[in-house]
Image: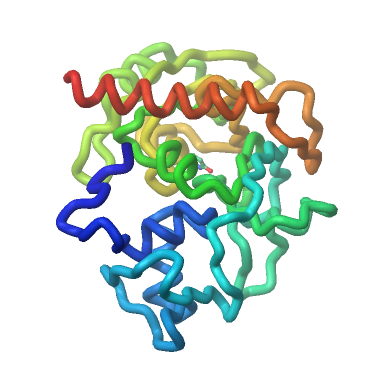
Length: 258
Ligand code: URA
């Protein structure tokens, strides 16, 4: 269940951000950004944060396009190459991942982010509920990365990472971390986290004295990059979508039982 669902709102009303998420426009966090950015109107008036609407009665537009809530839901996995932004547009004119998705008629959004210089598995969808479930740290969906760092192969640093690095005043729980391959002075660390702070994996590596040379996401929960090549994408199967939902909900239940 979505957090806060229906709290204090009459049955015919719904919070605008939730309506936008449910309609596949954006995650709830991104929906708030759209509202705050003046891109949403309700019955011709600029929307405000926290606003409630009557679905089916009020006319909601995003960037002038009507939000109907009935768009076909699509789920895409992409091998994001380095040098692409994982957002829908860039004021500085850099390439975005959307430019790699030729032939997809639906308006899809990246689920979470990968740094501009990072690469690997990126999900895109117009299913706001799945986006919310996958990006909320409470749902504990684990993402696995392969990170190539420069420095000595020092098991002490792995122990330090596993013991919980403090970042921004908060201890980051790493799900697992171990050394992988080795190429001269470069070491591969395979590391998994379920939180989503900006540059998290880079911060973890820097904090034990490693410089990150390459960062690649290999897995999101049950989904692996597999044989996709840089820049390639494909639709998820219904089974894969179901597995993602199951994983996110399992984390949610686990958190509640803690
Ligand atoms: N951690 C990072 O530092 N960068 C990413 O892109 C993802 C996780």
